[in-house]
Image (cartoon, one colour):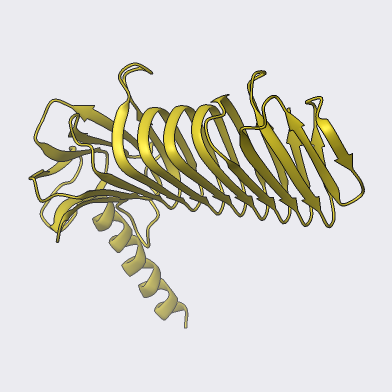
Length: 287
């Protein structure tokens, strides 16, 4: 039995060393790069990463290029009308036992690309920023699916924004969207300087949104957890809040206010837009 165990340990150790030093084609200590040209038929760019620190950079180019610094694998391939970027760290059963530093990935996209993007993050970190509020990243649809890790977005102008977070942390700043939906089942999502139609759904965790302008209706639903909506002082809205368990509070001096254990209703300003807030458990704060 000891001999069998010793043979197993030797084979496992040899595999770990081989996997660390080689990727099947030789030594793998340098950076890895792959790319794919964007054509008029390209409707979607997907970035799927896990356990890798990733930056997405708009650039003057006509292709999607991915550069991985560190030991791992990166692929850029076309699938129908989509270009898919994927990367993973290289190691025994997915672990890099002999590496202290995490691999880092840089994804370059054409700065004039304005169609759809999808970001899938299992863990790790993604940073994606436009130049400024006056020169944002413009997209038709932007979808985020966050398992864990951390995502930072800044300076975006999109038609539709979809955020699904099952864990982890999302930070957004300077986001303009015709419609935006934020689904949080765990973790936290913090959004600053947001404008556009808004739907927020929290089943656990927390969602905090600060709006520069109230330009459309807002729908909020909390089944558990916490939600904050920070509105501009000159917002015009009618608040219709329903509570089965938990609490809804508003710092605005509402006219025609109706408040009870399970309802909060009132008007602020001209009442141009509607805010629907529904709490089955947890809290919503509007201020």
